[in-house]
Length: 167
Image (tube, rainbow, N blue to C red):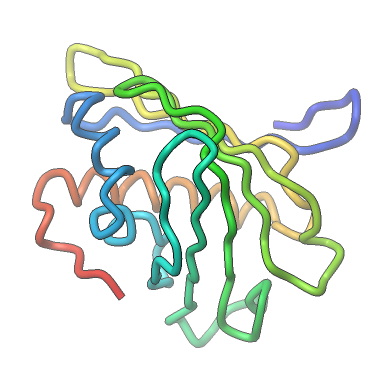
């Protein structure tokens, strides 16, 4: 999805997950849980800093484990370092983050807002990710695939929290 007014892209993905909004929210607040499900397929992660409160910051290093990739990492050949700030935390409802990528490439410059909406539905929770002001260096097809993969990981993690080991 593209916002025509300022030509900044917004990407979205959603999935119904068989867990309560509160359970999903808590999987964001626990750094060990978060790093178990957040990295998309083909990556592993490490939390370098984590302060889960409004105004709190975090830093996550995502390492590519797949050797045959079309794009190098944003920070180094095989790594993306992501810095974020928790702008809004509405327990069991919404998480809003401001994200920057550590990169010398101007195509990854700027701040991306990522909003996670947690809406209760009869089957569990409809989790919707909205990424606004996506840097132009992030290919839309790669981002869409990564967002869907992260949602699948979250669903798998919540079915069995010990399945997905951290970095």
